[in-house]
Image (tube, rainbow, N blue to C red; front, side):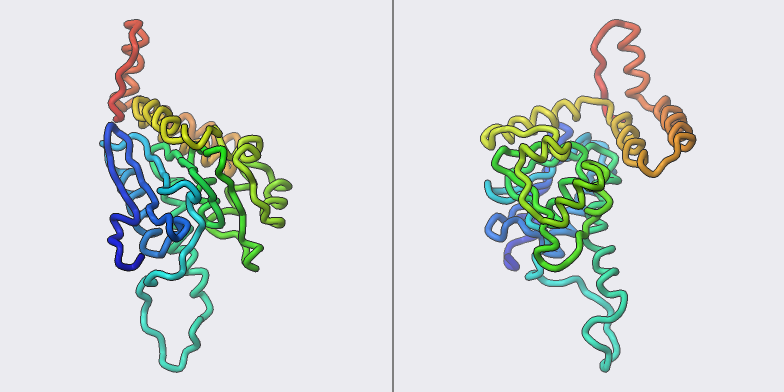
Length: 276
């Protein structure tokens, strides 16, 4: 797809407070070239700062694949020249590639100030599976599946998988999924707590739209700070967690939506949140 414009390979649109990022490369299993991966990262970082955006939906074109990980076929990012007599790969090259690539993408989901909803239409494998794990809410078609495929290729999980998966399913189940690399059907993902909802494939778009609409109408800053607290909870002591909760609450009191919520409660009406 080298001749396809990047804005077609990664579509981005904002309407009614919902930013939609769509991976549009179904003929390559919605695998991500370096350019596609970096464009999704950039769009996630942009949506986090855009006050017109109140929720992000990450989805994919087609019916078979959500994202099957890295596509090594496209042009690679420019790197500094190296000495003529240096080997093709030097110590530090692989780690640097991981940090600048898929780790940066996953971090852009985790650090996004808005809720990120994964609309999983089909297979999510490798880095694509871990991209799903990073999202705040996951809706899967009943025909979709998740595959921690790495050991089938003789490599270890990247894209933050060994950090994310044990926090969702526990270490023993995480090891099973990663050691055996079996397909995990959507319903099993729901049982394990990976998927929030599993719906018939024909209902995926409508279900995600309804969920995204609810989040877009919610107090965006409250959601963002809640996300921040929950994401930090596994690394925090009780003392630190309580301190951060109090600090976050203090910050939130300065928001327009906080005061609108209190006013609506006093006046016995439904609040109208504006997202700031």
